[in-house]
Length: 145
Image 1 (cartoon, rainbow, N blue to C red):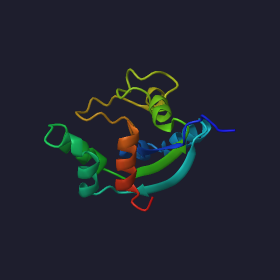
Image 2: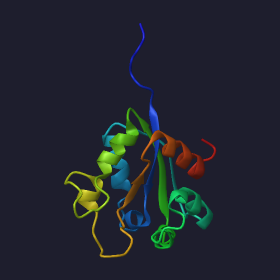
Image 3: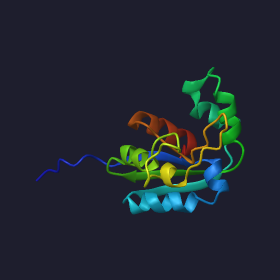
């Protein structure tokens, strides 16, 4: 008997400096696990300019890149690899809309996010948007995986 169930996926989740600063990293991890996903690895780290340049390479030359990198360097980031069935899509749904003001209640950004009126939206979390970006991002943040 063969199974038609798709293979497990992995995604990179980042609890951004605003989430770490506000003590929300544990709540984000709780929600990931409550959704049924597995934490493969978790590391609190200070992102380097080089890592962030590679992570945000598709935004090179855009006016928001420098403020975004400055924000991402403003404090530690909790980097997580989560695994599970459709975890990429599932975490992005769990995270909610990018703008915390309009993110739906029940989502991480909808429940916990705030619009601080800053030029870079500080929206607590990042999640890979496709299997290709997940593979690339996990390779950058966790090369040993």
